[in-house]
Image (cartoon, rainbow, N blue to C red; front, side):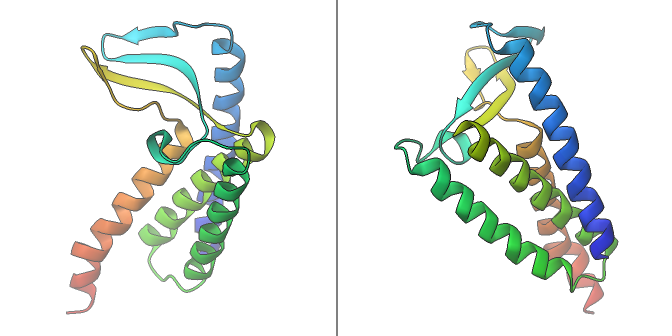
Amino acid sequence: MPRLGLAAAALVIVADWIVKWWAIGALGGDLYGIEVLPFFNLVLVWNRGISFGMFGGGAVAPWLLAVVALGVTLALFIWLRKVVSRLVAVAIGLVIGGALGNVVDRFKYGAVADFIDIHWGDYHWPAFNLADAAISVGVVILLIDALLIGSERHK
């Protein structure tokens, strides 16, 4: 299972890098972004904090957040080595890939490049990126497995 999880992580890292490379180049000089659908825009935002920009600020924050993310990634890798479920292996891989994708941004730019803007009228969800989406999907799968599927395995 570790190979499956690591393959998922590698896929996320590569896809995230390619999409961020495009977004930074295409949106870097556009202050207003690009409207794709009435509820979906592409706009480049540099996130110096954690999820939704919380705790952003200061020169040490990007490095501290990157170190924390690397620690979490190491713990997830240790967990991945013991997993027997394909679904859980992929979910852990999604989280690892997303975390490492954002760590690369923190080391390279001092912030994470977010560019997906989902909104309803004037209410905007905080901008996010492919790595964030992979982390979210991975965590949801792990929660579903722990609460529903995993409990069935132990009966």
